Image 1 (spheres, rainbow, N blue to C red):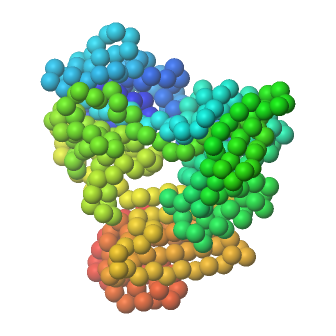
Image 2: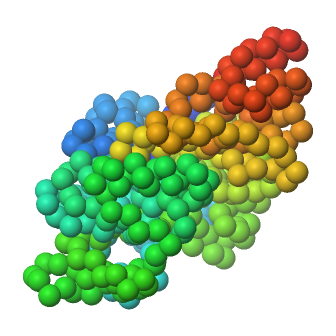
Length: 422
């Protein structure tokens, strides 16, 4: 059996290792289009913050790890898939056959439609190549404009501040991290960042980036009439799944590759994992792309198990984001913005930058937001994923949302449920 994996990120690497555990004799090939050893994009902010070197981003530290497992790494780009002939076309002009194929090509930064976005000194922060250029430009005292204050932008934010840059953030939404935090918690994050010396513009859009009057500077124009000077502009305005090479393949795609509960695509021998997979959403039952590393890792294991002939079911991704913004921890899980007709409760302590919001549907916890509250976050996620009926404990949590551990212990013991708290 010849297994081919397209993509050398966490989903692809974990899938390859899982396949080898299931089958000691099968052929396993990983095709990746970057020159470095397989690495984690989530580690790049730590590289920018000088907490690790480039080798610290590598997913596996031992130079001969893949050789010893009999996993071949091919550096090339897949340009097309012939699902009928079980064959891949490569940018080098070669082709590659497969018995089973896993698409784990991840995503790429979305390029905002801004005049001048292709100017020198305007970069995404996505690859190690990008990181090297940012390190060159973001020297102490440099003026850096970060376009986008979503999850990715806020991860980068701290690393840039750590480098001694003078940082300005521009976000078109009415608040920071609008896709994971409500207005109350997001405004506290903004206040925290401003207290740390970061200038934040929300509800503002960059309309143009031009060469400034001073050498080596850029002029960043906002729709509110403000013009910002910058030595470096970083774009962090979202990502798009890498599925263009699947055009004409016959594989069903929408936002990403549509997959079933075994992460199998519309073509029996082809699977998907990670940012490129449009799989089941745990909370809604519909399909969605969840571009987070824990989901990618889980996808990789489950897809590989099914490729190896075992039956492993994927029960759906829970929306899950945990973010460290300059030392302030925030998190969101599930239907954090509420279910139709559901109830909600919150705890607000702005002086201590603490916030907790719980969302209910009937007597089940279905979503949560937290800020500055790290106790029992795993329990909150566990209550959501296990769909435990809270009974009278819902009323107690409505009065005091911090009692989630008591509620979990009481309800799981009462019904003899052996739930796994993550």
